[in-house]
Image 1 (cartoon, helix red, strand yellow):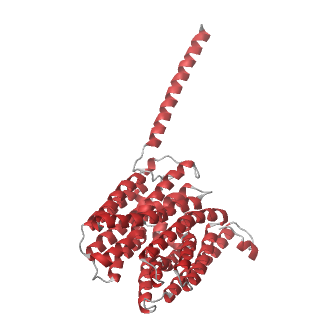
Image 2: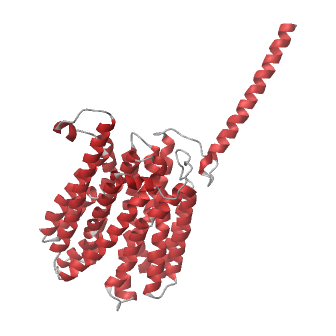
Image 3: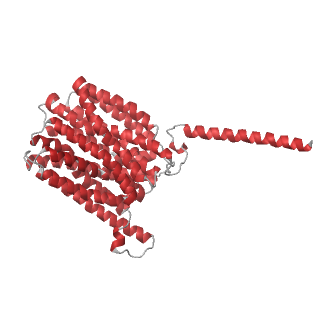
Length: 458
């Protein structure tokens, strides 16, 4: 009888324990399944887990809308220049598109720090509200200065709030496939370029520019609001004493990354802005210019993903260095020697596949060289120089095309673009040398031979 009583007691105890464990498990599962703006409550997950693809794909979708405005502004620019504001100088209207990209990148020094301080989701939702408001307010604008403030300034700032957490998410979820994840995410901007431009043109043709802006605003709000819910951090944010990570500015690596992004962005946009005009000089139509941009975006989508795969295999800085050199080799001879539209298609396909590597790889380099917990802040500080590069490059290329190329050729514009990209490759070479020496010195290794130096995976 005593044995039976003990057994019964043990069974009751085991059942009670099972109930407690079941209750605790249910609470944990409920906690993991609850989406909160308080990211410190999110569970810590291991790197390279399958869950990491959820926030990565959410970033890819949001990139379509973040960069969709700049990719499709050419459609609005054509409409404004030829129909809505035919007496307004093109340089004045170009400020709208220029400010979108400049502020989207330049304001990252603030929005990146805020993303680390406030959390990724809250920062992204601020961006969603500002971008939506920019589209809606622009749809009621009847003056160029109003469009500059709404479609240009307000949207650029809003896009910066969306961009700051988006840059930071993919690299922190992966170790083995860090480059691939970043490449897939940023490919969203190219995928967006493929359909966003065509959709914008179709809406303007059928409903006009005002409803085009309103529909884009509604779509931006609806889609990014859902995607923002999936902006999970892999680990909770660390407590911060200061808004900005000024400690990063004490490292040479930071300044080399910043100089590389500045010089690359200064020369990067020339082909995107002027390949359509080049086609017109060769007797092509406006549709030929649109088709060339579609090829450029398609090549870019493929190239950004391939860049991530190659970077995971051979090293991020190595991949960046080779891609920058190839970009110059592709752009300068093919563009300068082109005499018909056919070579321009080859140029756009190859340039699109190779040139955007820096967009995929730079966040991974920052995540590798700096503490991932302050990734948004460091990228934001570096992107300040990117924004300055966009502004400098766009204004300089327009002036060179008007004054030196006389709007009849692109020789000087191409040289300007190619030389800045070449300088970016020299900066990247210096960054590679610095990182290899610092890594080898930190490991207490002997002086590297020339062969060992070039075979380093960095």
